[in-house]
Image (tube, rainbow, N blue to C red):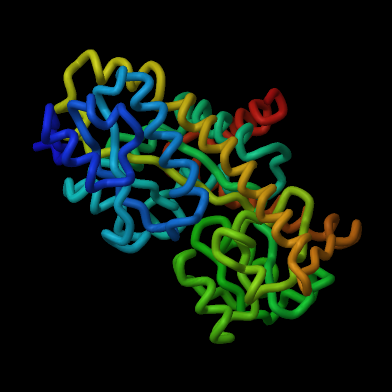
Length: 344
């Protein structure tokens, strides 16, 4: 049974009055309100920009018949997939690296060495999914409605890091997936905590640094606890995310609304839109760093970049083999992502 609420007349008006997450006059006209579960901080770009964009696209595609309301803190990040499968919410965002072993094909987009924006990567990711990665059926049990990646992840630390060799022996918060492979190759001691816990992990000195995209400078207040950035062109890795929906919630919508969402929102349109937003919040994070006293961005040397490129090649080979072992043509999917990103 779908978990969304069918609203009409006075009931719709009452729902709008108590929920600021519904948007404008469309909330009064909406017949269906989806519940979104999100685990990021309230002011993070995921909640401040990505989900509002999703709601805007859904309302526009359905002439206001479908809207959504955002709820925070329902469950921690690793539990979101099961939460949606169980129908406790209608839609959510998941980070694939939080569930080691559950996702393999998604690691392809996380590889270091890609050149291009988060928007270009997200579009390439969706197209490679349709052409190759969908065969792995790793999102079984939920409806996959978008795939995207964040921008290049960099090292953020309280003490300045100015060389690749200095990372060896550091205690670094690194997510699962390819981020873990990169951390191991660099000789860091990996500490795995969800993104919402990075501030307290750094503040308590439980970690020397974290590897995250530039948006985290503002989104997770790293300018306060990790004043230094060690930046590699192209980053250490890219994170893999999915927007997912409860299958029954989608199936219970009228067929014309399903068709409108499939045509105008789900898949490449939504993937492109949220990838573009990540580019914007990465830029905001950089600006925040540059304007905050005591913060610094230290660029990797050409020698360090060459050394990391060699490490990255070995990781690429390993991941392509892993994906191929899962029944996907890993090399073809990897080549497609690179070509699509170059074209965008």
